[in-house]
Image 1 (cartoon, rainbow, N blue to C red):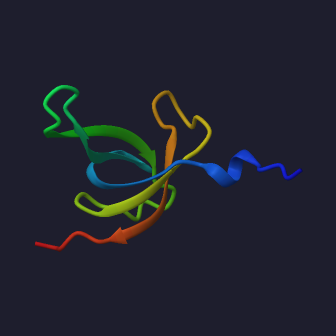
Image 2 (image 1 turned 60 degrees about the horizontal axis):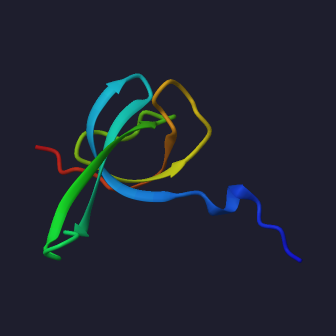
Length: 90
């Protein structure tokens, strides 16, 4: 019998950084589609999560991979795993 540690099956999401909310904190928007219960048309939904950015590397517009973690503050339950794509500098 094999036992899998909860560390190995953490949720991972890919989203875009919408705001820098303070030191080592960002807001990430995760967008997804679900079918309408009756009409089956795909509906676009989005969820905003508060994320811990330990090194302050991400900026607004970046695409990041985030993973669940222990509660770090009142709202932060996620942390940045990696930056997938940097936002173009205007």
